Image (cartoon, rainbow, N blue to C red; front, top):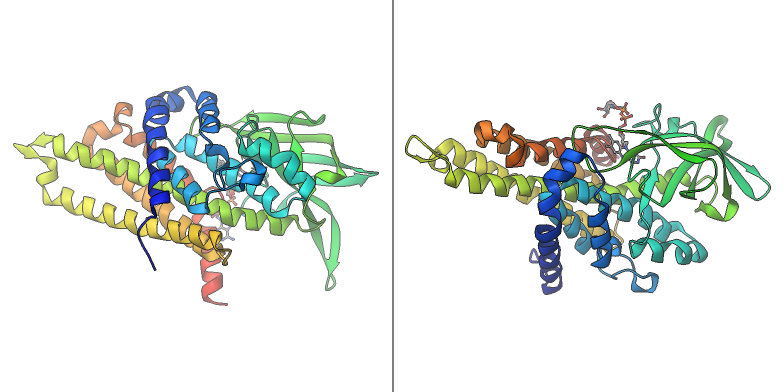
Length: 383
Ligand SMILES: Cc1cc2nc3c(=O)[nH]c(=O)nc-3n(C[C@H](O)[C@H](O)[C@H](O)COP(=O)(O)OP(=O)(O)OC[C@H]3O[C@@H](n4cnc5c(N)ncnc54)[C@H](O)[C@@H]3O)c2cc1C
């Protein structure tokens, strides 16, 4: 076991760090306030090769490992929760399932475009009536000749409208298993601009305000049969496996948010004077910081361990659930304490920690709520 980062990882980390300092940090407040998708930043990320970090070179990616990609999400999140989730949804939820389940033709058609950042990806599973209970979905795809006709609505889709390629999960029939009828669920690759595919409501949110969260509407949308991803009826498994990987991305986002808020706080408590001394000299402040630092370190070990497990092709479902659960709850606790240690200034936008607190909350909800992570972990404990 080696807890030290390799030279390669340290080099990658310093690259992501300087990109974040130069390109992401200066815009973070503006992105939050204008609620605008940071398209220019995404273009710059594409130029720097950040949109396809774990993608093999033969498909136009950087050929790096999962940990390198995860460290990039972490670094971006230190300054901007929005930018980090754009990268995470694109890489973990769109590129990864095509790489894992796509045919050679699908990979050649879609991966180079996505990995270069010429195109952006998204993933659509959730519906108004089917969130945690993802099997409750109603979106249907019916085969007519060589085309699937897609009808239904997906909600809360990250990178919605901005993305060019969508992994869409839909019901393709009913199957009978041991006397009970069950939905047959399949996955599709759907391109923006396909007739019958449009966008509905844009969500206004508590945080990650520049992230574009949209409703997708399918109205007799024709998808060629060759755009089915994986085998017919395997869509639910594809979605669940994709979310296992996505959870490591969200855990990295949560970790970065906690680290960013912590860094701001350490600087602040050293400078802020009350009662003739810095507030960092009060034991309450020191104990809060000690707890925050310890939890961040624990979260980091879980996140990196899950990334390593995915890289090594070991099972990583439980590791990802533990990493997301712990990192998300740490992000929430650390950002809340960061606001408290800033006093009244913590409540003021200029000091940034209030934004980090608002951004942190979603990490406990999306890509499976904390309750879902507990279900996955408990299921494994009791198996
Ligand atoms: C900003 C944002 C971005 C998102 N991006 C995407 C995306 O890109 N793609 C996508 O497909 N989805 C996306 N989602 C959807 C997200 O994954 C869901 O909101 C989430 O899974 C929870 O589903 P729900 O909102 O329907 O809550 P519900 O399922 O209604 O849950 C409400 C509460 O009940 C709890 N609960 C539900 N069932 C149980 C149970 N059996 N036991 C214990 N507790 C339970 C939940 O944990 C939660 O606390 C996004 C959501 C948001 C807000």
